[in-house]
Amino acid sequence: MFRVTIASTIDAVWNEITKTDEPIPAFFNSRMDVLRLAPGSRLAMRTADGKYTGVVGEILEFDPPRRFAHTFRFTNFEDPPCKVIYSLEEVAGGVQFTLEIEDLPPGTKTAKQMLQGGKMIVNTLKSVMETGRPSMGIRVLYRVFKLMQPLSPKRCASVHWPVDD
Image (cartoon, rainbow, N blue to C red):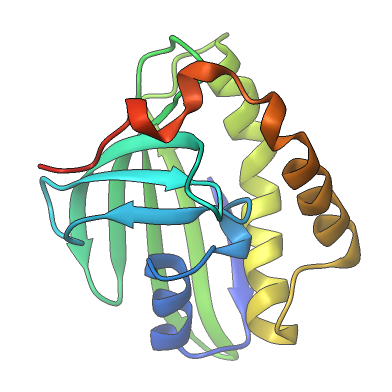
């Protein structure tokens, strides 16, 4: 579980983590592709240009502005999916944002990536909401990701990961 208090409104944080019209900096600068933000809909986290898909899943819960849960599977690994839950709660000084990971297959590449990425997600979300952008280190990392994009495995090409229901 990863948790942070963000000096912002619950609606602003909710809108940031559920937007579909542009990349979400806290989610590794991926753009969420989904037909409907509703339980049962498939989603894909794609590169900004839409050419590659890093994560796929199915929405399990969508309760604005408090809770968003979906299955989560990296497209470049054969690991089984896990579940991610984003919870928001108004607290003194802003919003408490919690990222929970359930059913994480121990010892897998997915487990390693998720445990490393959780802290980065909450810290980047806090930075974006409070300063308007990710930290300098994260911005540099995202530039490297963009440069490395052409080296992505062919299996991650978005044509292999449609979201139509």
